[in-house]
Length: 450
Ligand code: NDP
Image (cartoon, rainbow, N blue to C red; front, side, top):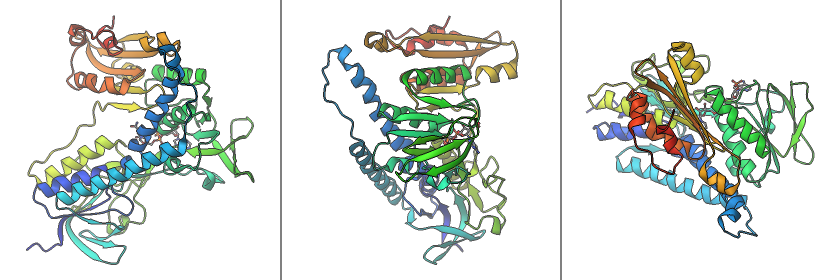
């Protein structure tokens, strides 16, 4: 008999925690998991999944607008926010059930309550029950950062935006990152007046700025406003329910139905007893871990957004899986953080892997070549839509190893996933050139770079 109640106790039922719990159990560990809210975590409940469904809903706006040019009469088409909102929430509940079911099938015991650490091997549940475990895994994710100004309580975040009572006629989105640009595209397509307001002069700073420039140009052309170099200073709530947002940019305050703040996410580690038992946290509150996901306490590990390494679901899943294989599967391993492909589901979407042009130049000087294809997708030609796509390939050295691929255009996230394999495989451009094009397609631009 073990001296502990469980071999592993996972706190947090999101992507990383669920994967770690399930795989550890299949490796023979006795596992329990605690989740205080809904099983599935940010991605499933109030992130990637419902957001992507809204993105699909938003696509209909463009398609319906252009349907006429493709021979369809769609007069009378109307958008109903509450219908889409409720259908999405039903599906989120279905997925939540699947997550719980998967854990149950894997013999993981589920505690639907908050858990805090009371010792290196001890957890206390909200009900008062005290549990011991040989290992504890912190997988509590992140939380949207507050606006950090007077009136911040009047701002919504990505947590609440999925539950709006009605579609806002106007929305100010503070921030210039993933969430701001994705929701700008969504609400603009639904007919809202959208302003993206960012503290600095650039949006999507980590992405290739030529690609980002195209997004902004296309956003402006369709009516999205960008208020840049505009730090947020105050939010007032008006008697009619609207909000007036003040910026330190010399401009006038701006009034809208809704203000949403999307200025990054902070690790969800407060009031969990972590510091009290000696787990080292960094300035942002992230659990400090090594490549093996182990914290400063030998029995306490952490994966996913609470470690603030790369805030992406597939990364958290890989970390959780590697933890389980290492600690319970007899296969100690770490994951690679190099060449992680990513996408912004803006309108149109951006997708990227490897070094941006600026980063490649900083790292390799003149030893790089940049190939570009700036094209108008065939579908847009017939419909009369002016929007263009831009693909960039960055190669390095005489062998022209592809070290970066960056795209904006319809379906770019779908197209880049396959191409990313070549970047991770460190393939030369010649391999792309040797591939016969699929014609007509947008993806063929990848093998036709001159
Ligand atoms: P991001 O990190 O993408 O962007 C943050 C934005 O907020 C930047 O434009 C930044 O401006 C600005 N900002 C940062 N700090 C402050 C501050 N203190 N005051 C004012 N502005 C500030 O954050 P998001 O909230 O959009 O998304 C959070 C994370 O969630 C992302 O980093 C991403 O990892 C993940 N995510 C991934 C998605 C995907 O994969 N498609 C979709 C949604 C989220 P500046 O440029 O000046 O720094």
